[in-house]
Image (cartoon, rainbow over all chains, first blue to last red; front, side, top):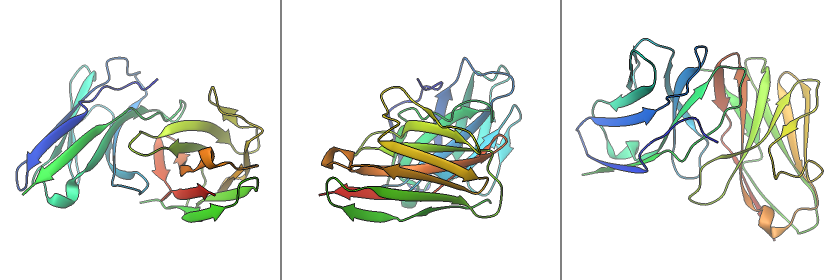
Length: 109
Length: 113
């Protein structure tokens, strides 16, 4: 079973920020929070990951709560090409890499 | 970032034949590789976990004699679908990991006719 819980779908207007939540209340101390996205019929694309500090890269920002039981992926200025299924995963390198159902993000004009 | 190459990207085979899918880590040595299957509009379902030089660990409900996994080196894992049937038609994806980081192949679309 997946160790994360995400809303099944979200909508976002083009140009606005998309905030995708994820609950991972059973996360272990050595597990990272990873975010991937999958555009139809392609392999998952890496977005960002973090352990306990907030992270930012050219694609997105990752906000992890202090207790590490939840996180939020932020796409600061969503575009139509950001429409995809977004997966939040916890992984340490010593466990299985298991996907939940993810969040289908639909970015509209 | 690290690159994982999966080959072929698409394959069509006749029912009863076998198909081999390769997963290569191009610029790093993968400690673990994962194989997934994805049906339309569904999430990725983990099939098996393989570590170099040891037998793969299969998830419940996955037939190890049908889905043969060979992880002969730190840069190559293969999945062979033996005696394929139309219900095996799916999108197969591999992942190669190095420590806590995981990288994915582009996937293989298998169609069994």
